[in-house]
Each structure stands twice: as C-alpha cells, then as structure tokens.
Length: 436
Image (tube, rainbow, N blue to C red; front, side):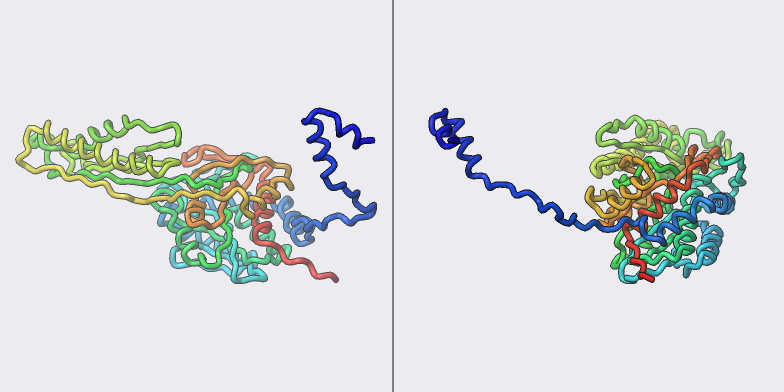
C-alpha cells in the first residue's frame, strides 16, 4: 500500500519516499547490552582521597607557613634565605630536596615512570627591596604584608601539596617535582623557570604554576613583554657655574614626555609603564647620567617591536632637543643607549590539552567555574616552547599586589588547594592501588 502512495505524488514527495526506503532499518539495542566502560575518577583513588582529606584540618599549618615564608625577604637575585627555608620544609615532608645552581628549590616525588616529569612551581621572589618591612599582621583569617599573596600564598600551597601527597603516600605515574623558583619578578627575567625547562626539557610533560590567590581564573595564554632601560650620559657639572650645559635628566624628561604620548591599540591589547627613573648626585649638580626603566606588554609581537622602536626614537629625540637648547655645548655632549633588560616570550595552551582537561575536572570536583586569561607568569617559558603549562591561583583571596598594603584572606583556601592537587595528579596520573 505504501508503494502505491509513492507512485503518484509530486517529485518532491517521491524523492523523500525513495530516501526513506533506502535507509537501513535501525536495530534496537539488546535489552541487557553492557554499558561502555568508563575510567575511574581520580578522586575514587583511596590515597588521593586521603591527600585531599589532609588539607582541611591542616589549614592553620598552611597559614603559619605562609606567614613564616613571607617574613623572609626575597628580592630578585636575593632569594637564598627563603630558598633554604623552603628546602627544609620540603625535606620535612619526606621529599628528596635540593637547591640547583640557579637557586631553585626542587623536591622530588618519584613516579612509576621516572623518564616523564610534571612540575608544580611557585616563585620565591618578591618585588620589594631588602629593607622593606615584611612583618605579617594577622586579623583572623586575614594577613597583611608585602608579598603575602604574591607569592606567599603560592609558596604555602606548594608546601601543602607536597605534604598532603607524601602523607597519603600517593604514587604518581609521572615523577612530580615541587619547585620554588627564583627570578620571576622584575629583572629576574624568569631565570628560575628558564633553568628548570632547560634542565628537564627532554622529560618535561607539563607545568602547573601557583601564583597568587583565587580560583576564578586559569592562565593558558602567555602575555609577551619586554623590559628596557634607557641611559643618557653627559659631562656633568655645577648647577651655577655650568648652567646651560646639556643635562641628561632634561633630555630624559623630554624623551619620556614624547614616549608617554605614543598611541597604543586597544586590540590587540598593548600597554607600557615607566616604572623607575634614576639620576643625579645632588640637587645643585648637573647630573652626569640619568636612566629610566620601561615595561612594555602586548598580545602582539609586532606591537612590542613598534613600542620598542618608539622608545628608542623618543630618547634620541629628547637628547637632540636638549643638545639644541643647550647654551654651552663646549663642555661635552650627551650620549644615549636603550638596552633590553629582559624579554618574556608568548605562547598559548591548546584547548584540547590534557592539562586543561585535568584542571576542568578539578574545577568540577570542587564545584568551581574558572575563566581563561592571558597573563605574564612563569608559564610563559614552557608555553613558548610548546610544553603544556598553566598558571592558577592557590585559593583564598588577595589584593594590593606589589604594594605595601598587600593582603591575603585564607577563607576557603582549601578549595584552591584541592583544585591544585587534583590538577597536578590529574596530569601526572596516579598508580592504581593493589588489591589487598
């Protein structure tokens, strides 16, 4: 009967009938067909659960270690005392701990496969000079001190993860290195992470960076940046008798004014900052030198190059303008140069990376949602070389980074610690428990 109905309709209906008749019939699944096997969740592992359970009752210990570490000054290139304290704490946790020739602290949790390595790191250094008062003031769960969040919280989390994993006798498939690295801030130029990547590059599979607080973000995109220093020199002299001679500070100011009027695009996002200006010996002396340091950042390498060229052109113009306006050029002229102090490479984590999948699984476990961000962190180095890497906050909340009023609130930090631990173990893998 259905055949007769398909013989007389319009062409359109006839085509539909032909297609339907040609389609293979769907067979119903057997009533007792087995479901596809699913891999067990990481949190189902008894030792992983024990490591997670260690965190909450030991939050006071974690907070105390954060305060202790923060009160040890660690300016760039002067992290040795803090590194020694972290090494001692990693050794107390039962890890084989050492300090490498760059100054990084490394604690090893040996895995089943020693030829593959996962690094979890937190930078030791701060932006503050050695004479900064870093005494921690505590008010309940809130702590205030320079460096308490960036990166006191990251270092404390590193110690907590190491102790939790070791106390629960977690056996990772890949070896996990707990690293307190040097040289992340300022002119450190990521020297600690560069050394780690250079030393372990053949084995390195993933890097998880603990930097600051929070659980609301994950940095998977490395923001490229350059740090530059402009130096102008001249003969120098007395403010009265040598008035009118070319003045390096005048030239620096002239060039700086030009540079800060440089236009930068909103997209790709591009920024610059004059962070330091130095020069002169006294108020009544014409200085013999003046210098400034500039930080430039951009989502585009082309924009970085354009800004660096603009700085050079502006400094050259400042020197030229100062020389042209000088009353007395017989006592000498100005010289200038712009040097690269450091360069942070860019890079980006693939959306389908196992490391990001491990982070998302950890987020799901703690009931968290996090947004992807672009930033400049230790993760820049591995990302630029195609090594999987992310940077995440270590839990709790913080603010006032790089200021004397920096603060950290430990409320809810255990969620961040669990997130970090599950991410690390998710990408390292954990050996299955042997049946008893």
